[in-house]
Image (tube, rainbow, N blue to C red; front, side):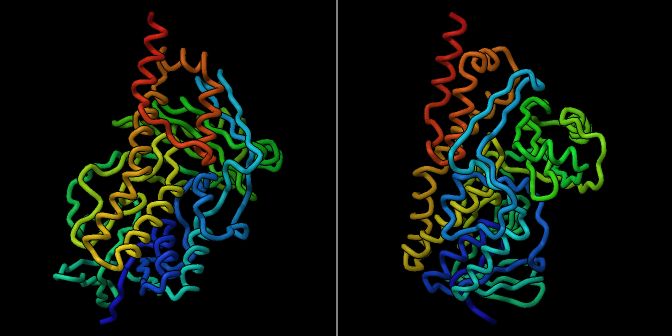
Length: 380
């Protein structure tokens, strides 16, 4: 049986980034991936500059498009704001090539990649874990669950109840007519209120559009119908080719911890997607970096690595997610209080969100107090 210091389950941005940082420090690391790379991954593919700043290498070879402006629409297009930057705010990528690039960079530092290996079960011993896979057993001192929103690894490791907030989304890779593509490929746009308690998006790629809809509201909602309505909003009449993918996004982190035994949760498995835009790539990469640093700084000491990882999460990531959860509840409720604040401060709010996505400003703390003060101002 082959032994590694660290076994990472999943080759997405969180797992591959972890592997890159560990491999760079000479820590024996394996990525266990159930599919063959490169593989298609459902994702809008809008990688914001905040996350791009944390990339330890250049990604120009997998960039489809870059956008220096973001258009936000509210109340079914009645309110419109545009925010711009001198550097790209959103970089468009396709996850098959993006994930594969990070994995290949990790492999350059000696990281092993096991493809077509499905994790079946985990046996916890005193100082290591035995990972039973579809192609034999592997042992490791640390296990990193980087296997996305469904995370079978988390379930095997003891997270029986899911305490994240999961929201439904539909994403479509759409080929449209030349005229429509020329017209719609110039701008990234978010249409808040195009779906109740959610939004629709249009992300232009190299030769097609990534269009999608999501809602933060619990209960049944026909996202397909809202997608069809969104096509009309965009003025798309002819679709040449269309591939639909349904998925879930965790927009609030787990409340019952991120470590059990020697298993560490990162990325979507932990529930680290940013709650307002539901963008998950940036925090996936950041949490991968944090867990790698914790293992490195602890000199492979499990208890110390656990302590360091939690400390790193609590400095910035978890407080920002808490603020984001509060803001998203306000942001997606199309009510008079929100619309009043948008009327008064809409452009400022749009610019602040772009500053956050660009990595120029952190998420504000004491969000609840600030919102209450603004609403009181309206009432009195």
